[in-house]
Amino acid sequence: MVTFLAGGTGTPKLLHGAAATFSPAETTVVANTGDDIELAGHLVCPDLDTQLFADAGELDTETWWGLADETTETHDALHEFAERAGLGTDPRYLDAEAQTSGRRLARWRRFSGVGEFMLIGDRDRAVHLTRTGRLDEGDTLTEATAVLREALGVERRILPMSDDPVATIVHTPDGEQHFQEWWVANSGEPAVETVEFRGADDAEPTPEVTEALAEPVVVGPSNPVTSLGPMLAMESFRDDLGSTPVVAVSPFVGDEVFSGPAGKLMAATGREPSTAGVATAYEFADAFVLDSEDGTDLARPVVRTDTTLDTPEDSARVARAVERALGEVT
Image (cartoon, rainbow, N blue to C red):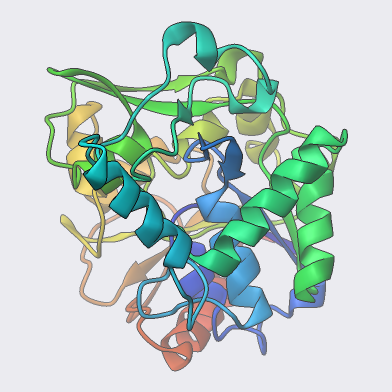
């Protein structure tokens, strides 16, 4: 068994064509939940859902978000009503009292549905409503995710990093913004002063995650700050990584990031935005997979390949490199 840590699109892309090397039956994915938000009362879990939809063969692989061939009638109608009422479509973060009332799992990340600043498809919305309904019936997020796995016919075990609330809050000169507000609504443009993982001090990995972390671990080419940061902010999660073989795939080629805001966020949080910076952040990693063009010298085993992840063939190639790197440390 091998456990993959997932945030954003890095690990789903890595596993997209990797079944010959890492079969779904022999792998577990632990997904970041710091990006989750409660929107109009229903819980949206972007990183869990990207992996669920990818394994179900239903992910929109043009955007790596939501379901393929989706309609957006409800989302479009919400925008229409908001515009008619003069309310706009900016994020509408609920007040401080509302952030800590109601469903505990949604603390510090509650947004009104007015104008709906994230694009939620119609079938995608049914997933969020089913998840939220199960939570309201007493399921943990782990249990609700298992229900969705079964409904989608997903073989791979996919786990949230915790059943406790952890919210990624980006501090900017204009004030606090939840990561989704900063990245989706504001295109990652506001300057970043620091990043907070609110709730992490009191959160714990689930028993299922602790069990999964006893197996060799692969960190996909995800954002070290906002994809892995919420997991690593839980002390027991970090401790578990320190006692198991870990291979990390760098999201950088030298100091060039493949995609997303990793470079900006690493620089803002005092880390060098580069493969060397990733290696410093991942002191628990025993080996790395780097791009063939990445000349970074690391004092740990390194396997190099073309780490582009545009096609299933790319995924298969990088997966084989990961397997070789695991062979160096297991």
